[in-house]
Image: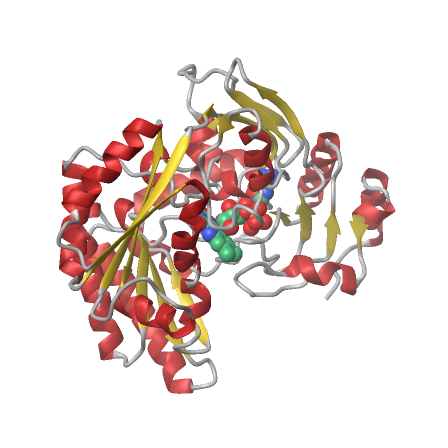
Length: 456
Ligand SMILES: Cc1cc2nc3c(=O)[nH]c(=O)nc-3n(C[C@H](O)[C@H](O)[C@H](O)COP(=O)(O)OP(=O)(O)OC[C@H]3O[C@@H](n4cnc5c(N)ncnc54)[C@H](O)[C@@H]3O)c2cc1C
């Protein structure tokens, strides 16, 4: 139901020219959902082209106590963009300039709507490197990545988005503007509010400018696929790789059920009887990468398959990893995707316990992903048209979350809390910690208009 008052429409029209203020249902519909597929219709959508419009809009929104749902590409999986309960969607996609690439400072300055892959391409052409690489890199934005502290496969060696954010310009509800951090790679003056805003899921303020640290581009990359007859051998090998002093760029695991799914849709390089695959990526100078590859071959001498590739030749190996998502639907038509994370030493216990949950509820549950940092993607496969399976999938999810917390893990390593994980946040956060977070929110957003009902 549209709850916009006439006076509000009048005020909005003064800030946004007609094509940047969307009021009709057919225009607004797409802004009501995200990758969670939960839908709630916004009252209106605004699309600023200049930071001053964000300031004026947040001034107006606070005065009128209107809920504001900031969004970028809407690729988040947890309903963080859904305008639940109604309000105005603030789309940041038109603020999409790469403002400055400074090869001397090793700093780039961007507006939030820049698509991450576009930035990476621009930097690569100048011999620079921005490591964070969420699998959504071609469809998500730097602003969204910062607001979710997005991770990716390269997080093992290079860390996550937040590790590259040097500074932020943030507009707060009421129109105040914070200039946090700087272009300096080190800065310990005052409280680190930049870090506070990273991962804040649109609940505190709106970024209009982002300062990022960049690195020199590694000259060479190489990849190594290795197969084992036992999951245990793969897990032991991970330990041996680190013990050998090798820190891979990425280190991914695909256990038996995942391999069976891939085998059903594509030719695979591993022989029958393979029950776990490790996919390893290296980068650096050619000599060092070659030495590491040789060391990996030695460590994995007992494996039942080894394949390596350098440069463009690596892609055929990573294509197999990209097949996991489409292949999973061979098992069941629907999935619940969890991105649980456990301490690295507890990965084996987590994978085994999750397998038992699958057996208990008679559902296929895929576990795979970032073995190197304990971030295990967990896909509970089920049929949404089958009432019993739906119930079982929900029960299985709860049981898995409890197991993960019991192992000292966390409900989410990448996707955040948004709407869908909110019912479980009290399982992880202690009462006083949670209370402190709510108090901090009140400092920046006293009327709770920024993405209400989301996150912590
Ligand atoms: C196929 C696929 C693969 C994915 N792989 C990964 C992965 O490997 N790693 C990972 O971490 N995530 C992954 N994701 C999740 C998602 O891509 C990330 O959360 C991403 O960072 C969201 O970016 P976005 O531009 O789509 O932001 P949106 O989804 O539009 O917004 C995300 C959050 O950011 C807030 N926000 C957006 N812009 C601003 C701004 N300017 N100021 C303040 N708040 C803002 C929104 O309010 C919302 O809370 C994947 C998603 C998909 C669909």
